Length: 487
Figure 1: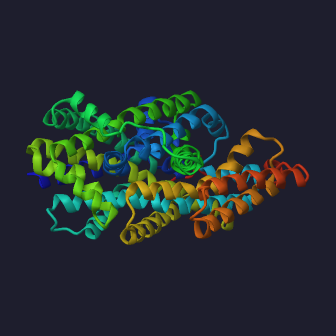
Figure 2: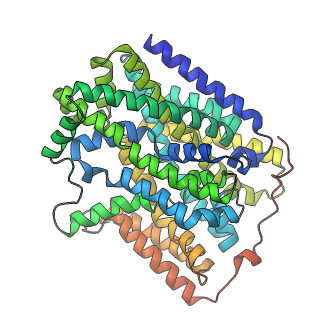
Figure 3: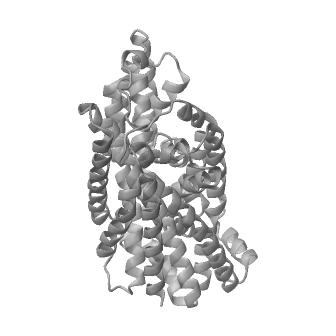
């Protein structure tokens, strides 16, 4: 009955995605839903940007093991990212009428910077997307009682996500996000109520977490611990700002006000609701203390089995159906956007500059080919990684923190910023970060903070040492055929 219910749910999700695909008539529809999403859909897509596999399975398990200080990156950093975007970036992004975030780098700095940042941002999605595929594989493996291996589940999950995203793009993402958000909220609230009662009530769960020191947020120790704490927070709070999926959510709104409100409300909703699976996970340890053995497993991914194992072994069938429906909703809603975002960025800002006269029909076909290619790359990454989803996500955003954020922020806030400064910033940021990751493991300074500092220095030095320029006029963006081209 459980497996049959999950199959039916997946069928409904794919059907919604394919139905939404009827709205795709050109590449603008495919990438940013024709800039027409109302507030309720904008909020749902922003919420779904972050509420994925790592929130339900990995962040919750990390809290159960390490407490609040162990999850400073997510949900604290990721929620602040959405607030920062709403307050400082959303209006600028919307007014510029861009198709991708890579278009900003071209208009502000020229094609070389556009290509370099777009490649860096695209590469960062491998970890993020792989985390979602790994979660799908874990869910299918658990549901099958071990009959399906984790690797087989990952492959099946990738096929399902591709099944509806490849045709409908952002329209399919938006409509399935809306459906899945409803399932997530209703499903996890009901599970929290049930599991909390099984553990003795909410007050008892919170009290036990407090007594165990899990509610201590600030780090203990000296400079090393505080720098590591700050680095974890800033990696997601700032490093995930120059991301195509965040950009897509903002620019898919029907107007500027909706873009800002959708980001603020979606970010707030995510921050509040992220604590629901955290509460469930800690209650799970109180119900079944033997689950703590997963913390000692050689494969760090095993701790992510806490919630699935409890639900399957200790709850009635209706709860199992509701939980896995909510879990799959969270994963699918994030995975579809995580595959679409780098696809649009790479196609528009890495491939298109070399084929400037591509028609919109050809561009749409290329988008779908790149979508499949990127999904296969993420699939290979997921099959070969042994990191937890939480670790994958943090690693992904280090790349954009050191290689893309400074040119983005300086381009919007500092008139003196120019192409030379952007190139210097990217090179110094990425090279210093890689060197620190390789040779600076014993340093008190986290590699991403060193990379960010060098990126800031590079932007300042490069821009001051060269004459001011106005790339937006020197390198005009080629006209986009997205308004009238038909698929």
